[in-house]
Length: 173
Image (cartoon, helix red, strand yellow):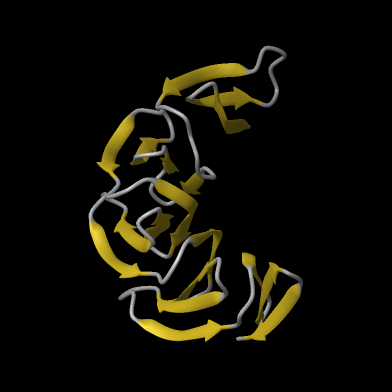
C-alpha cells in the first residue's frame, strides 16, 4: 500500500511496508489544502496559496495547473465530477477535472475553512453567521441561513448540518 502526504513543499508517496518508506516526491510548493484523490481518474488534487494542481497518481507528474483568481483560503472538496474551493476574494469556485471553471458564486463575507458536500448540494458558510446551500452542478443558491453568530465551522452529519462557533447549532436538511 502507498500513502501520499505533503512533505517539505512536496507531495510524497510512502510505502507502508518498507522500513525506509519514502518512494518518490514531487516539488509543488506549500500545500495548503487537504489532498483530494479521485480514484476513477487516478488523480490527486491539491492547492498551494495561488494554484489548483492536478497530479497523476502513478508518477506524481503535474497533469494541469490553474492559477487561482485570488489566494486560496479554505477547503478543497470533490463534488461529483468537480472541485470546489474558496478564496480570499470571498467567492466559492467550482472547477471541472480538466481545470476549467464550471461556475462561481459570491459569498457575503470571509469564507469558513470547511465546505460540506451532499448528493446534489454544496454547503459553504461565512464567519458572520451565514450558511449557503448551492446546487452542485449550477452553483445556483438553493437557500441561505442567517443567524447573528460568529461561525467557525460546518459539518454535515446524516441529515443535519452542525454549525460551531459561539456554541453548537443544528440545522435539519
